[in-house]
Length: 184
Image (cartoon, rainbow, N blue to C red; front, side, top):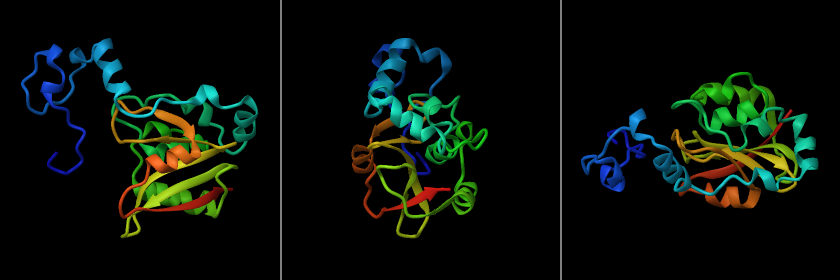
């Protein structure tokens, strides 16, 4: 909270846990199946990986060898974010399991992508930058109108597949600009 990141829950939102009403950090004993189901369900749009046609997965496999395994999954512990998800989908070993910082992600973009790309083709990195040019969010298209991302920097947010237009709309933020880069 001190750093303006949010995502620190209030105890009053979970009366069944008997917590004080203020902010708290999760402890393993508080993460019952019921609490986990409620937290995950409230975190966003459900993953639609089951709706992706087999031919889309097949076509994406060459440029995004890790995408299907990541779709609908959660990172271990507090690791994993949108940058690591894109890199992991592109086949960078261990990237999806790390809290990927901007510097290695920018190096990945420089080495493995070129400007451009199309939303209906696999391997287009959707990249949102703030006014100061810093990467703020990333996703990658699977082709056929589908894309993969990790929507938030929280442990309870899964990596999800959504229609590309839905994902783009949900990822908009004031002051951010969307650009595209094609994986090589």
